[in-house]
Amino acid sequence: MIEVKVAHLGLDRATNTPVVILQEKEGERVLPIWIGPAEASAIAMELAGVKFARPLTHDLVKQIVIGLGATLSRVFITQVKENTYFAELHLHRDDHVIHIDARPSDSIAVALRLKAPIFTQDGLLELTTIDTVEPMGPESGEVDADSLRSYLENLDPEDFGKFTP
Image (cartoon, rainbow, N blue to C red; front, side, top):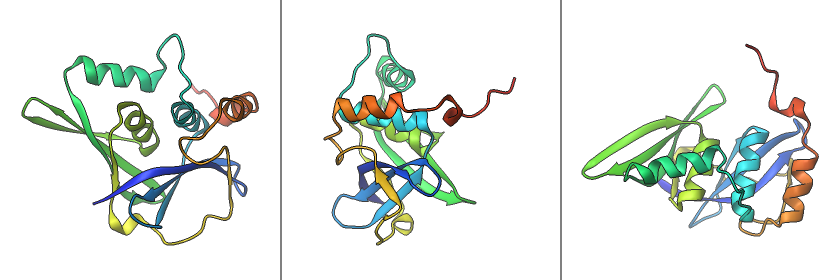
């Protein structure tokens, strides 16, 4: 198990899809994960320190964890199957450990809000450069409000997919 950090958030120029780049904390290897625009926005907002008067979904999850008297001890990106990544939230409450299956993008957004570490399998990390990813903002922790606002204003409703009842 290797600890990683959000190195940056970008946009894949080939597919016009947001990508979160995780980098090992003590090295150069990376794990790019293609994510949806809503999750990219949630991650970007937390990195930029943007807060809203009412909680968004990931803020709600944070409040539920805290309200239940639990702590998020870690997020673990466990595997990739057929180009789909899997993750788990590891919650601790009293002497119980609860593993919750979740999408990596949601897990990362919640981990950032709860200041929990993110881990992955050694085999998922790559020593490569991600040259098709265009940064959506400066490095992690330095996303400024203007860059985020510009990104959000340029989102197309089509980016969120079609609603089918």
